Each structure stands twice: as C-alpha cells, then as structure tokens.
Image 1: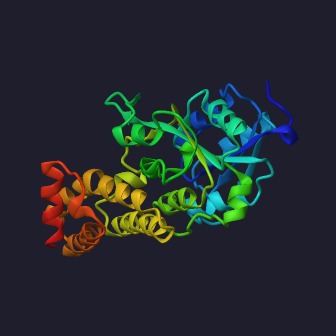
Image 2: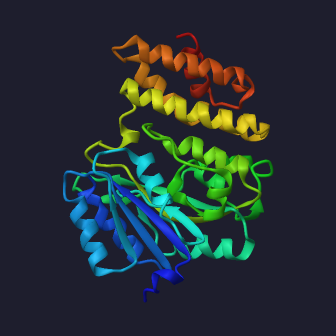
Length: 323
C-alpha cells in the first residue's frame, strides 16, 4: 500500500532517454517493492519515443511518481542532477530507465541505513542478458561485485574495505541526501561513465558506509547493442571510459586511500583492460591504441607492475604499454 509522499523515506531518481521498450519494467520494479515508502522523480531527457507518455501514465496512476522533462537532451549526468535538486526525502537512490530493482532492494538498503546511520549502503547486482528469442535471462553475481558486497559489513570505510571501490554504479546504492549536500556531490555533465568518478568520491568522503550481499539491481545488456557499455569500440566512448576510470583513481589517491587505489588498478588491469586491448589490436584507428597505451602505462606506474594478474591479463597489459 502506498504511503503519502510527505511520509516517504527515499526518493528514487529515474532518468530516461529513448527507453520506451524498457521503462515499463523499471517502473514495475518500483511498484513491486516490499517497502512502499518511496517516491520517484522521473526525468525525461527530451525523449523522442514514447518514454514521456509512459512517465505521464505512471504519474497519473500513482502519486508517488513525479515527472520532469528536459526541453533538450542534456545527458544522463544532467538528468540525475535535475532529480537531485528536487529531492526532499532523507534518502536518495537511482534507477536507470533500462534496468530494474529486485523486489526487496529498498527494504534491504534503506533498512540497513536505518540501523547504522551510515552515509550510504550498496548491494550486489547482476546482468540481464539478451536471449535469441528476445527475452532476457538473469546472470550470476560476478566476482568483483561479490568482492565489494559479500560478506555483509556495517559502518565500514574504504580503508577497511578497499574492494568496495569496484562497485562504481549509481543504481546499486541508497544514500543520505545530507551526504550529497555536505560533500557537494554532483554528476559530471556531458560525459559517459559519469558514475565512476562520483562513486570514488563517495567512498573517499564517507564517514562510514554499509555493504549487503543481496542482489538489489538488474543491469540490462540491450539486445540491440545500444547501451553505452556496448559501444566501447568508438574512440569518443573509449575516451570517456578511460577518463572515468582514471578520474576515479585520482579521487582515491588525492584523499590518501592507497589500498583502494591499488585495488582499482588491479581490477582495471584484470577486468576492464583485456577486452579493450582485444578491440585495439584490430582497430582501424591508431589513436585508439595510443590512448589505451598511455592509460595502461599510467596504471603500471601506479602499481600495476606488482598487481597479481593472470597470464593473459599480464600479456595484454604488456602489449598495451608498447602502443
């Protein structure tokens, strides 16, 4: 049963651009929450498909939904910032328009924050992978996600739990609004992978945060290949991706969180870099290889030379350093 909006505990910001095919599932996952004291700000980033209508219909049928529209497309970071400026509840979370929450996501994340008083809480997530028949299947919790969230930890810090830095996505967390206001956190505008830097700023600034092993979000890998994470062969996308990872490391380094820096270097070299090197090996533009080479050399200088890598990852990193 829905509660009046002035009694809500948490606001979920749902940005959407051209997500008509997926947004219904995202909103249904909010309606299905086992904890009903939420409101949602739906930010239509000047969509040209039916996204705006789906948002309007949701607001007309449930007072917990509020719609805001950009007159021109500003990007995901700007849409999230628009929502942040309108939040009035003690807690805030995010849900992208092509993803979904699991039914107990808010109950779990809000519940642990109620108990601990931490600045934010994060949980595990899995991919929604496309099948040949047009359906989506749910994947497993990947090792780096499990390392960040399992076992459960209460009121920890990034120095005590540096592996948490591998959880860099906005939609796996619920935070105190006061934490955003106190730290001046905002999403970068006009950049892809905008949550990479924000996540590391959160870890660096938090007095304490909680982690839970429960899967709280389903991350969609679109069948048509139109997700940002599925376009890494484009040089412009690669540039934002590398800037996001490097910027996140710089945030941790500037705040003196050496163990988290080493954890990010190790994880990027073992997980993020290998598929990029494989793309680069056959890429028609040498600028792709040069950018990846400079990035890899910087990682190596930050501690990559001593990072425990398997043979394939080490070999690919060696190849990239020569570009």
